[in-house]
Amino acid sequence: MDHEGLLLMQVKHGDKRAFEPFVERFWKPIWNLAYRFTGSRAESEDLCQDIFLKVYLNVNTFRGEGKTFTWLYRVAVNTCLNWKRKNKVMPLLTEREDQPSPHSTSYEAIMRLELQDAFSSLSKDDRLLLLLRKFQGLSYKEIGDVLSISEKTVKSRLHEAKTRLASKLEPLLETGGDQSWIASKSNRA
Amino acid sequence: MDCIEVQSRLSDYAEHDLMEREEEAIARHLQECGSCAKHQQTLGTTWDALGELPVEEPDPFAPRRFFARLDRRAVVSKFSSGLAAALVLIVLGAGWFMRSLSLQETSPPEVSVSRASSVSPEVELAAFGNIDTPALDDVNALLEENTP
Image 1: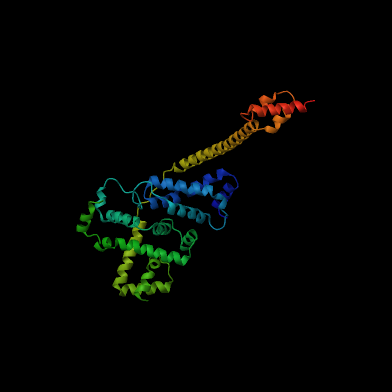
Image 2: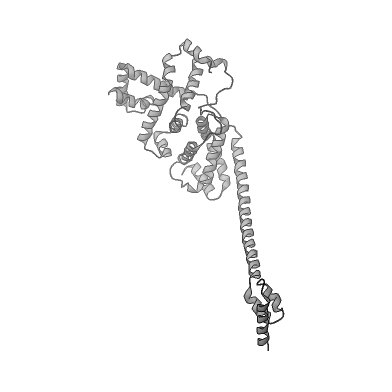
């Protein structure tokens, strides 16, 4: 059993103090997952708190089999899937700046905004798959363990999610940084 | 490899997650097929752009806030348990009290036992409600007959 698993076992057997190093160890990656999923700092903290609270309340179901982070990510993914937005803000990869910066008229800035919009329009399942792979760096097998699906299914679904995301960005990529197109889009940045 | 087969493996190709022979076959196909090459470029650029998004850091005090919430929850939980236990006791106590009251109000067997000793029959029988005088007289007569 890994070190994090031992910590959870201690919590399970009544040593509540062991939960503190566990949370400290995983807060950042789980917050990042929540932040990329919600696109809001405030909501990602709420979501992150809910995830760790669920871990704490369901620690009795932890058996210490397999990797601990797989169990944690399973809780995190389920919480994300059941999460309901409190504010009517579209889910984004990152929080948008309120004021357009001087750089927001660049192709990269517009690309980022378009990417955020495209990502937010994907389903929760697609978003989670992409996040687990791209930002959490999980292998196909690990994603399969988290989502309780086969490695082959992960590959296939991930490919579909990537294709859906890419097809939304295709019009932008086709311009290849054309200045007139950038000028037409820069007002929304 | 045909276009459908190549396009279904472009994700793995972009992540170098293919056997060497497969990767070479796809690379050859992409050199010859403009449509697949364009598809691969869109997919690759999107995937790379995702990775170039700015990295955000969580608030370093956020875990502290979480533990504070957890502590509050534990306190509330203990308080709730105590409150629930107190409520159960109150309900049980009230039930017992009401039952004992109700027994006092409707206890005819005790009336007949104590009647012969100290309390007057009129007072005791009044516990049954309004009783007509003739009936009470009959009872009194019966008592007199049975008194030694």
